[in-house]
Amino acid sequence: MAGTALSWSNWAGNQHSVATAILRPGTIDGVVEAVRDAAAGGERIRVVGNGHSFTPIALPAGRRMELADLDTGVRVAGHSVTVPAGTTLRALNELLAAHGLALPNLGDIDAQTVAGAISTGTHGTGAGYGCLSTFVEALTLVTGTGEVLRCSADEHPDVFAAARVGLGALGVLVEVTLRCVDAFVLRAHERPAPLSAVLAELPTLAEAHDHVEFYWFPYTDRVQVKTNDRVPADDRPLPRWRGWLDDDFLANTVFASACRLGRAVPALAPGISAVSARALTERTYTGRSDRVFCTPRRVRFVEMEYALPRAALPSALDALRRIVDGLPFKVLFPVEVRFTAADDIWLSHGYGRDSAYLAVHQYVGMPYEPYFRAVEEMATALGGRPHWGKLHYRDAESLAPVYPRFADFLAVRDRLDPDRLFTNDHLDRILGG
Image (cartoon, rainbow, N blue to C red; front, side, top):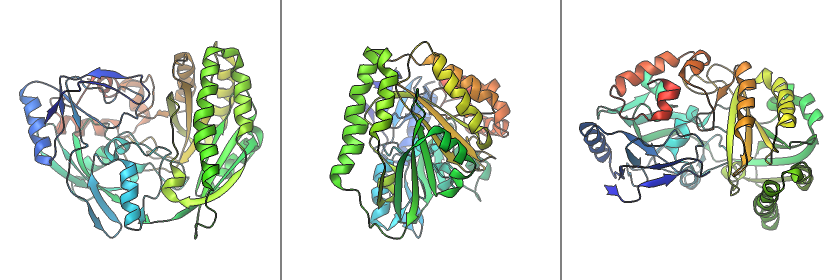
C-alpha cells in the first residue's frame, strides 16, 4: 500500500510537500485500514488528486493518500452513474459517452479527479447550472473514525449537504453517484467584442445562452466571448487543422512564447495583450459536449477566482481595470468571467445565490500577490466567496459571514473527524483549528 515517491507538487508548481508515507488503497476496506492505522499512529492523512488546486488544500501534514488504484466498480442505472472517486473527469467523460450519457455541464479542464473536482466546488459556466457538485446524487466516504457512510438527500442528509463540497475535511470520498443526461451536442460560437459592448449586454447575456463566458485582455478594450448552446446534430465539426491552430498552436505554443517574452521584458505586456486579443478570430463549430467544454491547458499559471453576486459584476470589472492599471508590474493573462446558478450545498460558492465568477491569473514566475490581494479586497467588499481550489488569503473568521451554513459544516466536521485526522495548516486557517 505504501509507495516511495514522498515528494509532491501541484500542476502550477506553487505548492510542494514531502509526505511521511504514500497510501494507495485498492478497496474501501483498504481505505478504512489506512485511516485507522494513521489514527492509531497519531498521523494525519490528506487525499491528493491530480494537483489542479492552486491553494495548499491538498498538502499533507503526514501521510498522502492517492485514489488512482481504488476500484469500487462502475454501475450505470438509467441516468445515474456510480464511479470510484479517484476517476478522472476525462475517463468519466469517455465512460459516459460509451453509454450515451454526459454530465450536464463541465469546466474547461478534465484532468481533475471526481473527488477533487466536487470537493473544491469546481464549476463550468451557465446561468441555469450549479457547480459539478450539484450533479451528485449520492456519495460514500470513510470518516475520521473509520466509519463508512453512504450519503444522499435521504440518507445522512446533513452529511450529504456538507460533503458535496467538503474540502477533504470530512473524510475520504471513495465512491460518487452522479446524475447524468443523454449525450448532447454543443454549438460553440466564439467572437471578439469591445468590452463596452459586453458590459452593455450583461443584464441579459448570461440568460441568452445555455453557457456563456468571456475573457478580458488587460490594457485593451477587447474581450473574447464564447457561447455554447445545445443543438440536435453535430453538423459543423471543427476542422482538425483549425482546432490545432487555435487550441494547440495559438492558445498554447504561441501564447507560452508570448508569456515568456512578457516575463523577460514586462514593458511589452500591453502590446502582447493587444496582439493576443486580435489573434483570436471568430469561429463557430459543433461537437460532443465534453470536447467543446474542455480544452488543453499547457501554459502554467497561478489563479485566484471569486464568486460574486451576479449583480455586482459590472462594479467588479470597473474596479478590476483600475487595479490592473495601478499595479507596479504587468499582467500577462486575460481575466475570465463565468456564471452559475444558485444551489443549496453548504460550502458551495453558489450557495443561495446566482453568481458571476471573476478569475484572475498570472504567468508562472511573474509577481502576483499584490494583484491578487487587491482583487480579493475588492471582491470581499462585494460579498465575494473565494474558490476553494484557487489562491486566496481569507481565514475562518472572514469566511464564516459569507456562508450561512458555515457553523453547520463545522458541526458535521466535529462529528465525522473529531481528532482532525484530515486537517492541515490550510484547513486550520480557513475552517479553524
